[in-house]
Length: 162
Image: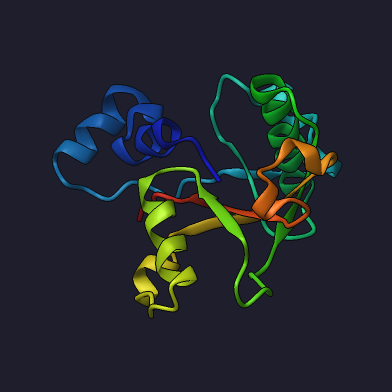
């Protein structure tokens, strides 16, 4: 996962200064752009290269960044809503009729609504899924009574670039 501005900067050649920008404007090919994937073993690279904007994170299962994102969502929910939750990453939704879901944007909500309603979701839309999460409330009294004790499914949408 990379910040869109970082990807656009590399694609536009601005990382290479005026010459890179001229090559892109002339529709020439730039050399391969290397973006280092940060993980626990090489996390210190970020501080050495933070102004170069050439590091990214992987949200693949089993990677530290995905677990860290779960902790950030837990903190965010606690901060804004005053409730304690546990968030975990999912590979797929196993419950055939989950109780409720939250899309983190309009497109995410539309995809989850289609899946919940049993509609076929076109493969191109499904490939836009960046991450899928399960959220459990520590205290079920913080939930609506009709869904208390059941998990919430949420999804992050990716904007894929070339």
